[in-house]
Image 1: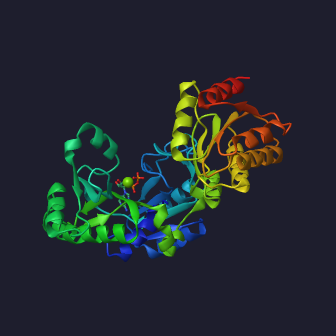
Image 2: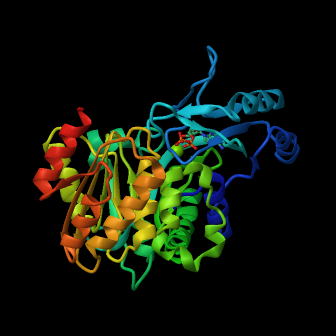
Image 3: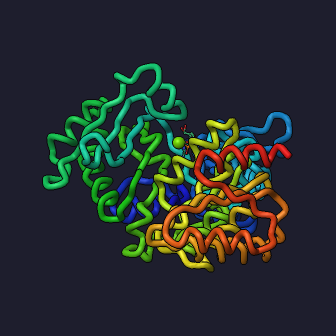
Length: 397
Ligand code: ADP
Ligand code: MG
């Protein structure tokens, strides 16, 4: 689960990390409160969406001369003007796709006098199986380019989970970030704080880009992006409350309510399968036959008729779906149950696109008979190859 920058900063602040004063803004009425609370003389108006690259982003509705999704305001009038230009508009960044994301929240923050912009993040390093800091002096808006062109400027430092962040670790991070004087003192305190927040709150990623050294020599967290491990959310009701469903794919939310693993993709063939391995194989073979999957939908091992029908309906909500491939191996799951769920969903949704069903395993004959006797226009397939061939042909008409 992802949260907004302002929420991430509040979490980090509760652990003692240095963040600027700021006010979240949900409507234009809140802007007055923001300028009353924040002293100035510099304010920053920041679009809150679950995507990075906001500073370099562009609003679909922008007029000539308008800047990106993060703007510096040198007077109060500009704070109001920018808020009006941003709220409710669609911000396109390198991470949003071409339609952009509607900005429903802003964060108005104290402007900082920046000396240097650094990069710092914490994640789980799969190579060592440990949490690791990633640090670079080259922070700001182009870290992807740094990683690509000059990877030697990035330090990855795994942390021993039994020992936590030692002074030696912190010193190494300070060296990598070239921190001196009060910035170094701040850094020695900050790294353990971030590590504590990361582990206690079950974060899967914590990215601060930029972490800044200010003109006065102190450090400040200027941007914060946090993702939480969904499997651990049950023990963090405070974090669950931060969820902003308007930022998530509607179909993925519905799927999570049914405990379905559904990921929306860009292609045209909807897939309903059981088991992640079979899902991968199904997507691969669709590609082999020259088409692209519209989604990854895994109904899991023990799905009943209702869950299968729900999965089917979620897949049908995607307007790009031109055909559906159901590929199920009945192990624990029984093919007749799947067949009944598919038939029920086809009737309920008045399915208008071709449907190929490949069943194998427990009760396969009963399952096939249910489909054959349904009187519905369902194309049966014998094996995976046959199924892929039939669905890719069927969508071409
Ligand atoms: P994004 O990464 O989505 O582009 P950031 O929050 O990193 O958004 O902001 C982009 C840039 O805007 C930063 O690299 C920094 O230069 C500037 N900026 C952001 N917040 C402030 C602030 N409070 N004071 C001064 N400059 C800021
Ligand atoms: Mg940033």
